[in-house]
Image 1 (cartoon, rainbow, N blue to C red):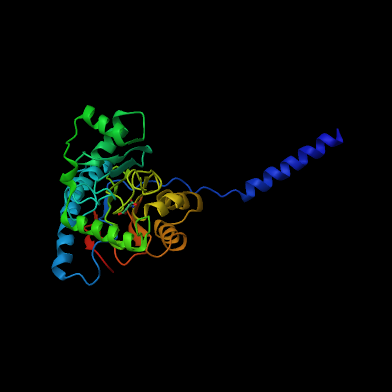
Image 2 (cartoon, rainbow, N blue to C red):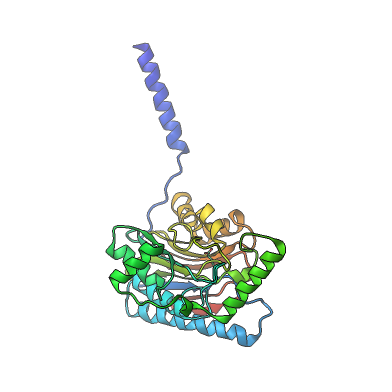
Length: 339
Ligand code: ASP
C-alpha cells in the first residue's frame, strides 16, 4: 500500500516537472481580416553590387511586374493561394530568374525544375521535383495538391501526371538562356580546375529561385516557391524548394519562402523552424527569421521572405543582396535588391 502511494507521488512529481518544463505553445493568432500583404523574391544572387544601374533596373522592372500582378489580385479579393500561384508564374516566365524560363542547368546541360505551394489555413500542400517539360511547375504543384492525395511527385511520375491534367508543356531547351549557359560553363571549368564534385555554393550567382508569400483579405496565409536549383547540380538532385518546411512553408502563424543553398535549408528545415519558433516560443516573425538566418545558417547560405498573420512583411538574408518586393493594403509598394 505504502509502496503504491510512493509510486503515485513520484509519478505526480514527474508529471508536474514535465508540465513546468514543457514549452507553452503561444496562442493561435487571430488573422487580420480585411487587410492583405504580400512579399516576393527572385533569389539572393545573379547581380554583384557593382552591376550597372541599367542592369539593376532590368531586375527591378521584372520584380515590379510580379508585384503588380499580386497587388491587383489581392485588391480584387483573390485568395492567398491563387495570388501565390499567379505571381510565381509571372516570375517563372521571366528569364531573369532561376525558375521556369531562365532555370539553371544541371551538370548534364539539362533543366530539372522543382516547385511547391502551401495553404497555411489547411496545411494542404503540393510539390513537384525534377520536372523537365512543364512550363510552369508551380501550377503543376498546385494540381498535385488539389487533384491527388499526395504531396510531392517527382521525375517521370510528375511528367506523366502533367499529361493527365493538361498543363502547358515545352521542350527542355525552351528553358535555356545564354547567361545561365555561361554560368554552367564557368562552374564546370572551375570544377575541372579544382576537381571539386559539388556545385560551388559560395557562388551567389547560383541562386535565383523565386517565391511569394501572401496574407489575403480572409486572413489566410500561403507560400509558393519555384526553382531550377543550383547550377551544375547532379542529375537527380532535389533541393529545398519543393520540400514543405525546408524552402517553403505556411501555417496560421506565418508564410515563408526561401532561397539559397538547398542542402542547408533541408538540414535545418529553415521555413518550418521559423514558423515553429513563432508558435512554440512566441517569437515575432522578425526575431524568428533573424535567429534562423543569422544564428543557425552561415553567411552566404541564403535568405527568406515572410509574412505573419497580422500582415507584417519581412526579408532576412545573409548574402550580399536579395531581389525582393513588398506590397500591402496600406499602400506600401517597395522593390529592393541590396540594402
Ligand atoms: N534553394 C535553391 C536550391 O538549392 C537554389 C536557389 O535558391 O536559387 O535548389
